[in-house]
Length: 400
Image (cartoon, rainbow, N blue to C red):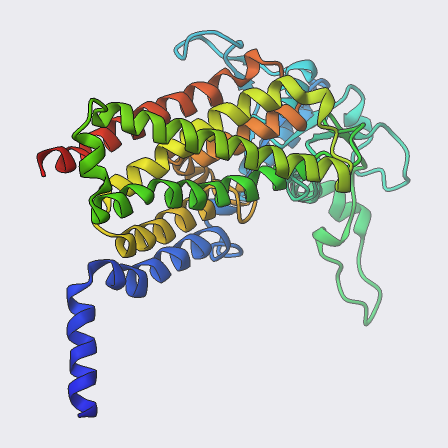
């Protein structure tokens, strides 16, 4: 009897595609995401390269040698020139100024910029604590990039001025080990935060949005799943037999789920304001714009999943697989700046990544409403796509 039950269970699993995906595919997907983010560290691949803007205000042979050493460092991806802002892609590039570098960091294009000020050529390899400092412009939202860039700057300086460092170091005393170049500090730096200086707890908004959007996707999927229950009970057929068509029914469901999602986000952020001192009221316009568009998109996403599924069990499997995967790569589980550049770009296939970027712009980067256009536009586009998919999948109920 026991072998029969075991064989029956395996037969059931072989026929349940969703269970197969949840059992074998989803763990591999999560493993691959985490391995891509963390597994490449220390292997010398381009994954570890930190994007950094370098501004040379000294324009001397020494400063140019330092820039070349930074460009040659395997841990950095150095950018010294860009096309003017708003220019066509084919426009000629120009050297980045300190003001442009500060704007790039403040807008989130880069997490760190190094400014080599005038007089830096006489401050390298002094080892006396004097001379001008190299300015490290950084975004405190990414606590890793600035520290890595500052450390790699020391290594690049020693590589650029190796002969001078060797001369300073001299011959080791008998029995004394030769100090490595990485143990020497030939240049002094000063870190300057260009965003978030007056915020005691600004990143709370990012975490609130990340958790809210993840649970919104589960909630919207469950709300859309009511259609499956209505189809199974015969209620949907009776509703469609009236003057109310499928388009009007889906519209009503979408508006209801959207309103519920808006309320969920508001509750989350009000709690963050009351308990964690989030400055919500001064960011209200941007918050409302991002909340309405995020809720509308998430509601449409839930309807698309619900209409694509054939049963409640299948919907639950699809929801777990898709929502957890989108949350992993979209920033809900850990910040996207920990990912490689390619994975950060790939994560934008999920609407939740755009939503989190929008909330980060509102509460951390003090963006204007006009600055939210890329995120709002992407969310509106996703909303239209999901609604069209839901309408197409729902045709099977009209035919039935």
